[in-house]
Length: 367
Image: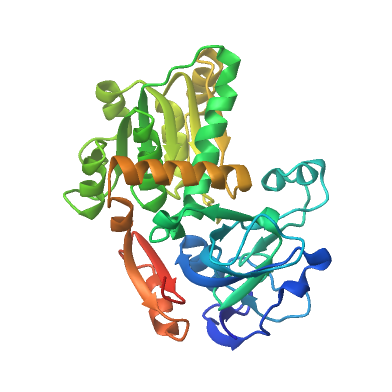
């Protein structure tokens, strides 16, 4: 069967390759679930892997199949599988359990192992192929009515993890009723964070560099969030008007913005970081001021990346709620499509730095 892969460590090596078709018998004890891939999202992680910034091939292979944002349909199940049946729509999680105590209790996204396995990212083939087989605990069933937008679930799970953990952390206060939120970044993660937080009834200010109006600002307006261009109003100035911010969600990819956000977080606030920044850039920061503000203001900073099954299920709830509250809004995030695995040039183009896609995806097979 066809698959889109890269040779890890070799920039620009994306190519079409062949894999053996999997079988439910590949998973022992009758616990296999065979899934037909339908859509696979493309994101910055895929871009970085194709640029040879990271990623390792599975044992026995010199290539890594890309793709970790997947939705598909169950084709066949093993004799011991009762959780799924053919025809179910599913989304697979990305990371697989290792050996730590956190892996043992289902929190494999919190693993303390130095080596980790992630589909389409590290040591395991991804989903940009025709079929895959998986164990039931790594699959999340989604309603048929969400099938058109289910490819958004994996990135939604990341923002769900950050928001849910922020609320968990704030149980330390006994009472925490956030009302004002700042989201730094108006890309796909920022938009999904705005969606989730607005559905909770919070006042949301979303910051980006571009001046509006544009598609992103219109999407924010539709769900009742305000957009602020940092060209017109820096975060610090906006905090005086629309803050103090009880919760800040960073999704910019810029370490400099992280330290800027730390200065403008409100007292008893939580700053959630979702960017994975590479390189060795040095910046000057007002370290004493930031430290003093965090200590005296009882502030907290936490990161979110990857996600376990619980957060995927929370994402299903939020996507469903958004479809009810704002019908059709989620589908507007799916701006660019590549039809079929054979269109490598289309994939390369959408992974390019110049792409203006909100969410690009490959339609491997029709829904």
